[in-house]
Length: 257
Image (cartoon, rainbow, N blue to C red):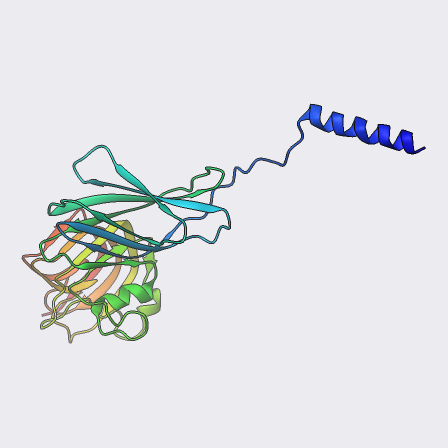
């Protein structure tokens, strides 16, 4: 009996070997990064993010190029670092970025794509995913956003609804008479919807109240309704030498003087 059992075990082992049975291959890509902040000036680019939680995450692939270039430059950052500093020479203008997660099997996530515009003031950039974060652009907001200001740079990472800010007088525009918005706001082609303002006490009516040079707003779409007095606009109420590129507002506006 023992000989029969031994012979059966040997035969089974040979059959498994011949069939080359192995564990199923891993074809599932890891999750994507969540962007946190960026510092960008003429000689240094630093990006900060949060890794996805995949146990087999290996690296984060960073790709970037100037807006007019066709080819990306890339570098890989080991999982867990969650930051990279890239030294170089950066001219004023727009830059495109792609961050992808790569696991141990070589699977690669869809890239997180965004643009940053470098201006002479070289603000710190913050990444916006929620209406609460968009509201924090005005500065002096408690919680996790105490260091945000109207002079910083911002990058919108998804569409946002402002329905939760529609009650009463509605949305308070970003930037007022004595505290203009002077930073950079990258819309990344996303939409801010349900903008609602119903007030007669403001110095500028829009998602942004008053912007001032060197302010730059790009690739942003806004929908909603505004009722106000002077200086009423869907995107910006009053623009003093700021730059607006590739933006669109579909906002019902009523202005009374």
